[in-house]
Each structure stands twice: as structure tokens, then as C-alpha cells.
Length: 195
Image (cartoon, rainbow, N blue to C red; front, side, top):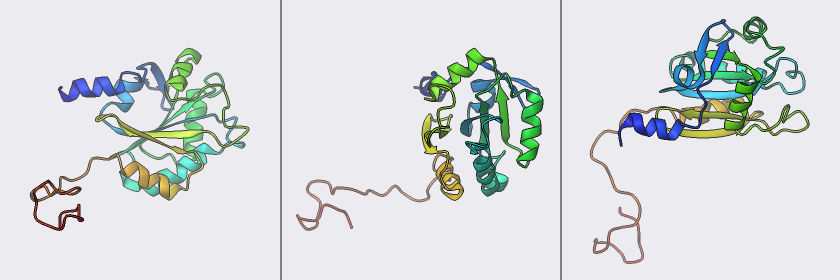
């Protein structure tokens, strides 16, 4: 299977809906903002930030990522309140959080917001306001490797977890075997590891 076919199979459930960024730019959610990149995706609302300061937490994570943000990883924050959170309000909010390059706030029509919320397992409005249930999705869209962490995770832990899905340097030297020893190998019978 080709790399392009694998990517399409792994990510086909992510809607490629039209969104408007905080910069006022129209973009397709998957093909223009996520495809072939390492991303963190969260839902937010300016109105609910006092009760659920997820954007403030994401700003702390963005600060820890430093120059990797915008180069190695992108943050996409989707508003759950597309009526109130206009691109202009999102731009001002982005500025108030530090205006990090590589962090994009998006708004979209309610139907598209619902499709995105369903894909990212965020069912119902204001899910986390009564408790701590909201999550941040992170992943490497190129290879289809995804994970989550709770919104209130320590920023250093979140920044570290995102590096787990970033492409790394190829290891040098010949591959080494780890794990159970092959049958017939030298060594103690009770030892199942290769020295």
C-alpha cells in the first residue's frame, strides 16, 4: 500500500470541511491544516474560557514547544461557539495568548463544527464545564498515529507527549534484536533475552 493510500485510510474519518482561521483565511480543515503534519487539536470557546481555561493551558504548552511550534508541530483550536467566536474575536484572543506562530484558531458553520466534534469524540456542547472531561487530540497525520491527553495535563508532560509522534532521526548501525531469543540460540534455557 502506498504512503498516500495509507494516509487516506488512516485519516479518512477527519472531515475536510471549510473553516475560517483567525487570520480570516478560508481553508480545508484536513487537507490544508492537518495533512502531513504533527498537530494538536482542541476545542474551546472564548465565552467559556473562565470556566475551562483550555486555551491558557495550550498557551503554556506552546511556550514550552518554542521554535518547534510552527516548524515541527501545529496547534489548531476549534471554537465550539461559531456564532460568537468570529474570526476577528479569535484574532484578538490569539493576540492575548501570545500570538504564537503555528497556533491557528478556526471557526466554521455549526454543522461543520458538529461534524468535527463528533470525529474528535466531543459529544454535546460544553462537555467539560461541569467536570474535567475535555481532551486534546495530538497526532502525526502523515502516518495516522494519534493520541490524547486531558486538557489539564501539566504543560511539560503535554509538550513531551507531542514529541512521541514527531518524526525522528533514523537509528544508525545494523538493526539489533530485542525480545525472546530464537529457538536454538546459545545461552541459558531459562534466559529468554539475547545478551
